[in-house]
Length: 424
Image 1 (cartoon, rainbow, N blue to C red):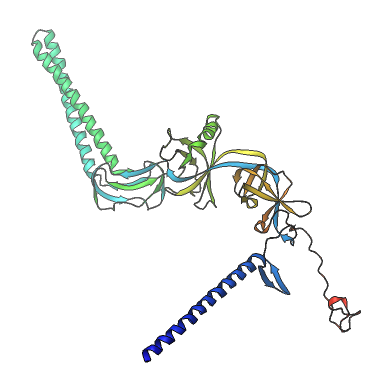
Image 2: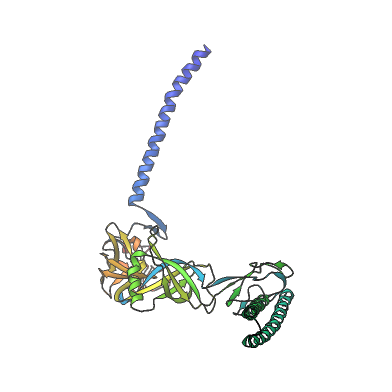
């Protein structure tokens, strides 16, 4: 009996639970439908004294305040941008050219040096001894040559007297030539010793900034051991690429002999670092990227450009004169392309399709669809539609309705709703 009773209770509860779930689902569906209708047609925000609709202002809606700008005739500079790297004209690794002990380093890391400044000193005593030895050998061989020439003069006299054989005279003449060759070799040894002795003083081959030293005094260095790197900073180059489609415009300027101005900006394109001119370009197009490498030279007097620094290079290709110019913030994009909202005399707006040209910063040239003097909307255009009424920043606000007074001492009667006197 207990089993049957439990089954009956379970069977009777099961339909009630099913109907309860159906009722909940129906209630949720109704709430969703009502909420969608309310959002689509009655979207409002609470404000003082009631609610304000957030729907876009149509032709019959309230006038919306907007920001505007007037299209004007002006000049637009045509720029070509590219990502570049600062490259020094010379980057020289100063190395030892003779072996020996490094006695001293004559520079501070990071200092500017001039060409010919002393960089480091190698122990010169070994090379001084070699030079003295070569000079001694030269003096000895010069004495032997002088003696051989005296004997040659004597043999020539004896040969004329038919006192010696011709063979002895020829041997003496050959000995003189041999000593002359030996002296030339000795002079070469002396010059080599002088060069090696000069190499013990390591000087800057170019002017620029020295880096971190790579060897300390007291170490024995070999021929080719690196001492420091010198980077030339004034002037300096910027290596960047331009698209091959813009190559004809650049070549046209170069072939005409006109200097092509190039500006270097920081990574964010906000700060101008330096101004220079286009110096050269590569002799072929990179087929993998469709770009050409070009190089611009900058005086870099203030050292604002640093080697291997990433910069944004901007090439001035030309200037478009007398163009219709508007702010880029006025541009709107629709299904048919770019358009702007033009403010008419009655403070209503109309959509105007336009075609744009070059852009310079926050200014853009309009090739067609707009004339100088027309007013375009730059702020608040997302709430506008064709024919919407707008309020311009210079327009005077409408006079507010004076509220009914509550001062019992005020002249006249206080009116309530419906135009009837209050309390009547």
